[in-house]
Length: 370
Image (cartoon, rainbow, N blue to C red; front, side, top):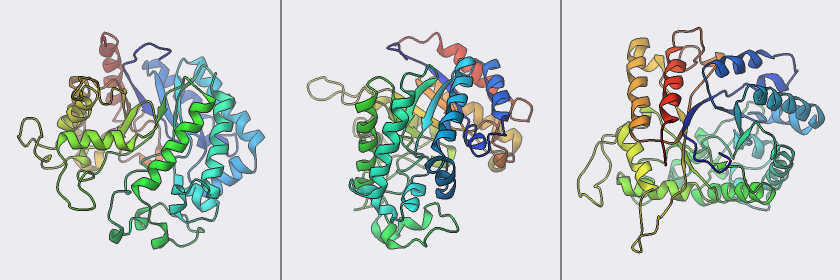
């Protein structure tokens, strides 16, 4: 950061701001920030505006003065605690197409009402906060790429978030990789025009295990092909980014194009493939994609493995992060009551060991050198 390589682990504090922005009465996030400071957590990743279209419209579109006053307070409180903030601007991108009365596929049209609004919103927010000491990064959306590689016949619209009062979705809401990548590139351009320094993240999900081969076949991608898709999906950003969970593991990658072997598609090997991409060189010895990598979400659900099993799995994946020297990552999720039975981590619940591990990881990573 500030021109110096950064190595560390933060947390997703998903609703820290959105719980506050509506009425200004819920200030529990302040105590949360103080707790994170006590664990030496360097940064948080937050939903910067809202999720559903009605909330975005009520709290932001129709009430901008109050919105920004409260976001100012939030950023200032983070700064007081020396905690950086990654602002994810369009967390649920379909909320923005819904608010504009457009099909989800409008995300791919530079002249759509949605895209025009996104450029305006991004520029407005960037100009306000680009010099704020708490700002650590701009992020486009949350896992906007997760469905885009599916063949048209699959109808990916059926898995898009949908609010009860929004228009019913149908095939016209199917969206493609070129459409979403156009939107990510547009966001990156808008940010960089107005802020030449702050890192830009995509917020992407792990690429599908077969993204390189789709739509022609369902064959698994090789480690090298996973790296190529990572580069493709992070178009225009100055970082590469994805989320990775144990549910993303596969039986095996496709045949490694270098070693001609087949390796398991487990968590550690996936991270190894991603980190190998940043070291890959072309025929002239030039790095193909040297951008730093951000593992934007990792975590384990107690509901999947039980409390004891989840702790074992958590230690395995965090050890894999260290072993593969992932430079920057963020735990999912801190102080999110809606996930009390699954992922939610606090300093007082049964998953507090995760904060202890993050603190230890950050101490270790401070000793790393480029």
